[in-house]
Structure formats: C-alpha cells, structure tokens
Length: 121
Image (cartoon, rainbow, N blue to C red):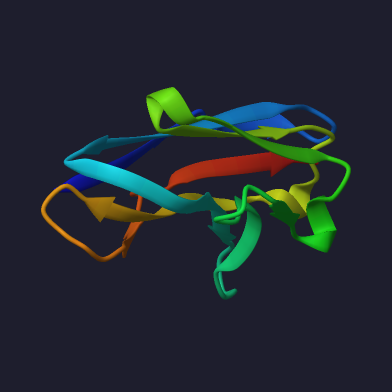
C-alpha cells in the first residue's frame, strides 16, 4: 500500500506565506507525476502545480509567480511554497502522485487526505 500524507496547511492573512509538504510512503517502486491540486467550496478540483514525468513543472495561471513546487526525490516528498497568498487561494489542498508499487508493473494514482488552507482578507 502507498500513502500520501500532507502537512503545513493553516490560517494566514492575505499577503502571507505557507509551505505545504507531502510525503509518500509504503511499498513504493517508483513515482511518476507528483503534484498539488485544490478544491474550494462549490468548485471543482483544479491543478495547482505538478512535476511531469519528464521533471517539468506546470502551474495554474492563477498561481504563477507566487507558488513554487519543489521535491526531494530521496525522501519521496514534494513541497508547495505559497507566497503572496490571496483569499481566493482558500481551499483544501490535495497531494497526488502516480506510483508504481513494489508488487505492480503499472502506475496507479494516489491522493492524500487534503489539508485546509484559509487566507483571510
């Protein structure tokens, strides 16, 4: 089994910063894409930032220049540094990854439980 565990969410004032972490653990053979999505109340889940399998970073237009995704491959961990936060960034942030477990030849998608980010105006 593979688990993704997020941490680092919380309440922050507009203009502030937060850093989210997501650690993958369990029976991991290899990790493909890994990144962050978010879901605000009444809205669909949207991609925020992610590493592609080629190691290229993709960002939602709404966070470009403010958010930075990084990773520590040795620790199977991905980070999301969020600066200049806005009230519209308020959402539950989910980590996701495509992981091949040690007992499988194929990749499967995994999601974390989510961490709440609230930005007050």
